[in-house]
Length: 163
Image (cartoon, rainbow, N blue to C red; front, side, top):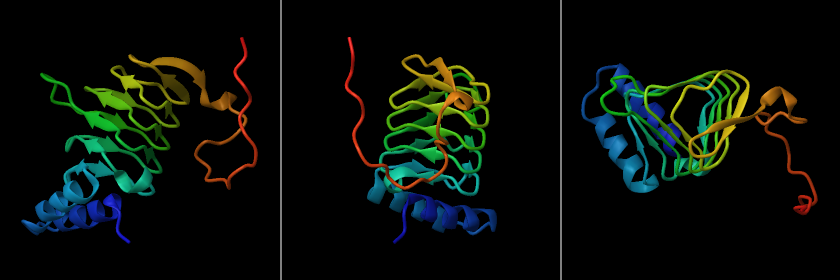
């Protein structure tokens, strides 16, 4: 079954081969089926995937996304007026569901953006950011697991909150 990223790749290939109209049609299909706006003009690297097929994702056509990134549902990567530059996302970036990356920002490699965060400033490599506006809450090197590794599910439940 095709998902939004596979359809994007077909549209991007046709666009780069200078085949008119069909990339626009594929973009329309992505919009209708996935409620997503992913332009064939956007540069998206190999291995990047959209969680749950890319439902509700909005990506500015001038944005650049690196390799092996994970983009959560209902995420937005958008520009900001009056700036010409759109967000530039590095490699191995985890963008949590509902996150918004706005403006001419650079997200460097190995960054985790927590769900529902609003990123309005550039983020250096290996950081974890969260909140609205996003603030640094940690370093990826301090995690006891690799968030980018697709491990099998663990058994059990999370600990209870404590006072």
